[in-house]
Length: 219
Figure 1 (tube, rainbow, N blue to C red):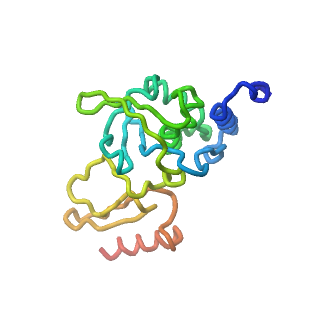
Figure 2: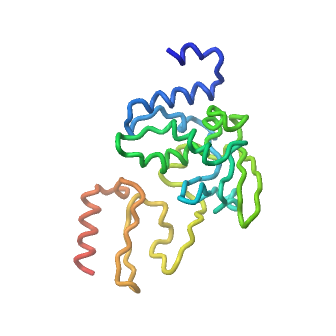
Figure 3: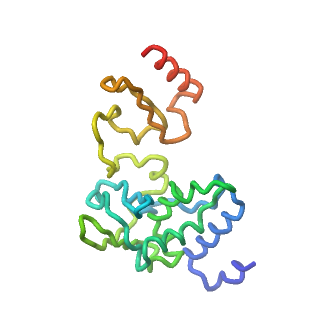
């Protein structure tokens, strides 16, 4: 009723945000009103992730690689912590499980100009301005959408990752498969990369588990 009353005074992004907020009322982490999968270029080329010491650009599209590892200080004119608090009001979670507040739904919204504008964080639904800090220096960048939401989750193919590779890396590109494993001979160890609760292409999860068990038994 409140949304119906307010409709004549709301912009399209504000209406979208109000609908998303209604979707969170079911309190189900797998149910939502999705505007992130709309057609066309919808998101900027940054994957922004919260850590205990702040909000950081963990991954970036090749054209935005200079921003990798930067700390996000502000979104629009709003401090990062306040921006995150507003965005989290749009994220649906299971009762007793708030994991979505720190994972991919948050990152999707933080790169969506339409949602950020609907929340009053940015003045335009067509671009986002971030204030970033890197190596002791602050800078402001304004980005326009360069990717579609479908290309952001679960994997950002071709994007660069800020997390450096330390020591021996058993997988050439660990962020592009749902789940996989590899032997690390120098450590006499098995490396398991678990990115998503989906089996590898062409396999069931039971088949993957069987292949993993067989590998362990023979090595």
